[in-house]
Image (cartoon, rainbow, N blue to C red; front, side, top):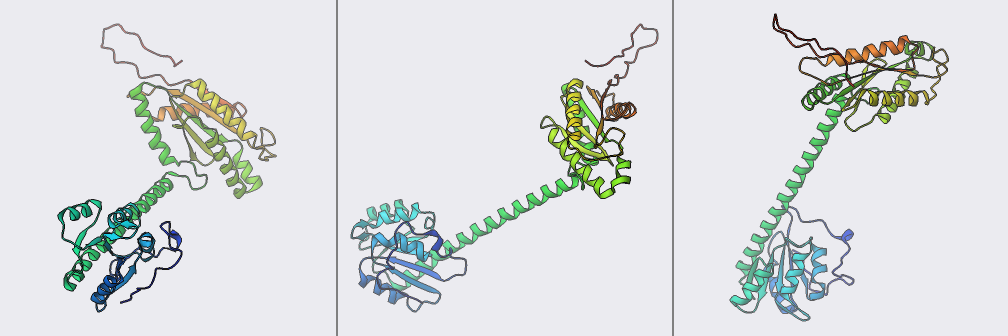
Length: 372
């Protein structure tokens, strides 16, 4: 056991520097008793009562204006607080302990010279945990000190376990998010991969079918890419795909749009609630942005730099049409863009919905046509 019946260290004030505060007690740490009392004879009596107790440290503060700073420095597991001190009353100090985050939960045993119910009630209302008439019986004093210290350290242990659990949960959440990102991402370009593209397109197809809104798709192909690889090598080709992917991601429109790698040198952009005209404008924006990268491709049929061809299609999904119909329509438009000279944007006419069943002998008209 350690004791200090001298004056508290100079320079301690209520606004104690948190950087020099010892760590919070942990479960199994020694019991730390802080006595705040202006009477040294009382301090000596309590010190003698505790001197032979194993695992118990005793600290003494005789001045009320140093009490909070001393508590912040020593981090006690229990505070013995005298109710009557020069310059302030003990209840004000109890309230000050409770108002400070570092001492808010530290058990406080109030020491008084009289067994007065009104004083007891005021002490508990201020935040005290216990009440003893001084000088208390040694056995009772030790029992209450150990009981309150044990409860406090159990509280700290519970809070630490809770913080560790929250941290583990956060780490698990971050790991799951990273795993999900890796599962849905293309390893080379960082865009969504083909698997997630199919999932996203199917989900947006169902949503647009419910809302009767247009769904657009752009299919994008890097022009003369095989020739580029043959000329500059596959490592340089990978670099081109990365830069094209970054450009497509930067150019995509609404937050609900999805840019993905379709396969090889082909990319796709899903655009919910987007008309054919808006799809064409976005495709043209992407085409111009890629050409503006000025990635040298001296043997390209479209000029000196890497270019892309884009085919697009729009449709209002219906239960009678598969999602592949939109992909096929955009692919047809891409074929035309490649066939007609590359480095261009073509938008395909949307497929017609299936004709309704007409009973034999009844008059009916077939429906064909596109969308505005």
